Length: 94
Picture 1 (tube, helix red, strand yellow):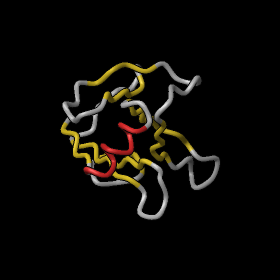
Picture 2: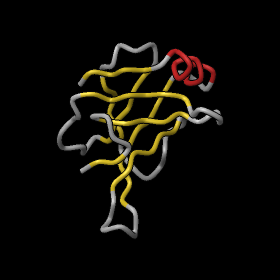
Picture 3: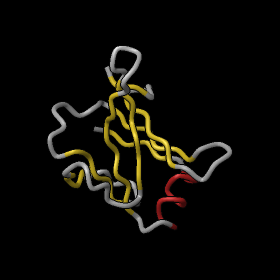
């Protein structure tokens, strides 16, 4: 998996401890659309494993994640101080 992180996202993650957790959630509507969520503190609902990202921060993905994406893009929200993630160019997972 190739990780592409913007400079702004790397700075924001660094300010918050240098760790990023990325996981998939399923909505209750839209046929269970799956989207990505991020946090800089360990979420309690999932077991995570460290991924070798080589990006200037520690990346953690769900330990039970079946297939890794080809690319994971990490960016900072345009108007907020939120870290956003997209894989294989999408904010949702098929």
